[in-house]
Image (cartoon, rainbow, N blue to C red):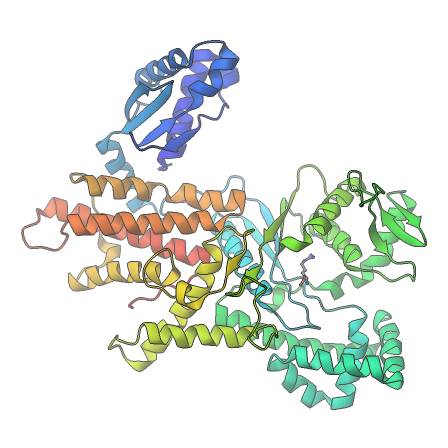
Amino acid sequence: MTDPQLVLTERVQQALAAAFGPEYSNADPLIRPSQFADYQANVAMSLSKRLRRAPREVAQEIADQLTGQADGVGPFPGTVEVSGPGFLNVTLSDDWIADQASQMLADPRGGVAPSTPPQTVVIDYSAPNAAKEMHVGHLRTTIVGDALARVHEHLGNKVIRQNHLGDWGTPFGMLIEHLLDIGEDAAVAQLEAGEGNAYYQAARVKFDTDPEFNRRARARVVTLQAEEPETMRLWHIFMNATVRYFNKVYTQLEVTLTDDDIAGESMYNPMLAQVCDELQERGIAVLSDGALCIFPPGYTGREGQPLPFMIRKSDGGYGYATTDMATIRYRVEDLKADRILYVIGATQSLHMSMLFDSARLAGWLPEHVRAEHIQIGSVLGADGKMFKTRSGESVKLLDLLEEAEIRAAAVIKDSDYPEEERAGIAHAVGMGAVKYADLAVSHDSEYVFDFDRMLALTGNTGPYLQYAQARIRSIFRKGGLSPAETTGPVVLGHPAERALALQLLGFGAAVAEVAENSAPHKLASYLFETSSAFTTFFENCPVLKGDVDPAVRASRLALCTLTLRVLETGLSLLGVPVPERM
Ligand code: ARG
């Protein structure tokens, strides 16, 4: 374990147990980075009430315990001071920091400890609707979900991706009939090109105005529900073409979703009758005006009436809620999930919370399984409204991503690299910019989609961090050296070396926090701070200059290597491509 915050947490907890009894060994020591020392522990203040003693006195006792620590754990790796009303200011020793950094260099996992025990984490993300255009909101659930999947995998968890495509339901009656009208080839070409919206609208107009088409579409819904072979063949043609378009977007974005991860609404169709019957038999769901509903406690409408979670409409049809009850059961019972993340728009929060409560009522979501709605905030245009094109239509995703790449090429146009490499860099920078902008803000807040800001080479942006890591690579290239051959050890002299080393040691905790709190933006800020610490270090501490002492040079190269590894691994975990040169 190299992370100072974790080491100190454990140390203070041991001190608490020794001073006040074993019942205190799990108290949160409230360790935070501090302006006045490396870290500050605020636990004395929170404990003083419980202990009925003055906070400073409590703090002093903890400090004495810490400085006296030796048995088993070794001497405390720094100094402790009581200050103010009862803060504990901790300054770590240079030797300890240097030693931990040297160990991190030798650690093949780069300071990221695996989850123990590993968990099975089901992540539901992306989930565009086949009957409609994949829009910018799906871009965000895709990017955030993919980052979470990568992080959990890196921690050694078993990740099961579930792309819950909207690929079933009444609209498919008219979509299939429209396919027959325009011909399979024309339909496939249009869908593969991402013209799903136009396709849908054409079908919709006929559905609303042409009684004969309307009748055919309704009849088609019936044969679809019955999974009649010819209807299923047509449905597959429609879906395969649509998925080919989704895959173009995924490839362009470099997200890890594959066809094996598709588990759309259609997959649950055969389970829905059983879901309803069982819930009705057990009295979890009851008939209300002919509809089958669950009434989870605590949800009321405007007039105080209990809110239904409707799993079967009065006409016998199933809906989004029915399918989602089936997703939980499948993910718990068949996929053996320990944790389920639903990465879905924040606007669906009522649905999700009623779903989880209903599933708990049904006993399908046992206490030990964590189910969480990772709420995704809206993406806004410059006008502060939902992101749209100038003509008011929703933006075609692939076009948007291609535009990012073209703009990125303009940003990096000065480089004299070969044409092919430049195209690769433009792709990496364009996608990195779009993805990082999504990940750098908390997933539940809204943000404005703004190419200029996301492509800026300064500030907390993807291109800035990509550039920061490329610059470190160029240091090695200039010196004719390889990061893989750096052996250190790290020794600390200049304050900027110390600050950088301390920052680097926090990597494991930053990654663990993303997994625990589903907060990729915390890793993004951490990487940004790391690159700032590196800049200060590099301005103050020459690495390759001729007169640098060999031991100092070896240590500084080690710090360069560690920074490179942290930035490279961290960006990859966010799904941001890492170009060799920029
Ligand atoms: N297709 C839905 C939408 O576009 C998202 C589905 C999310 N997953 C789920 N299990 N409900 O809004």
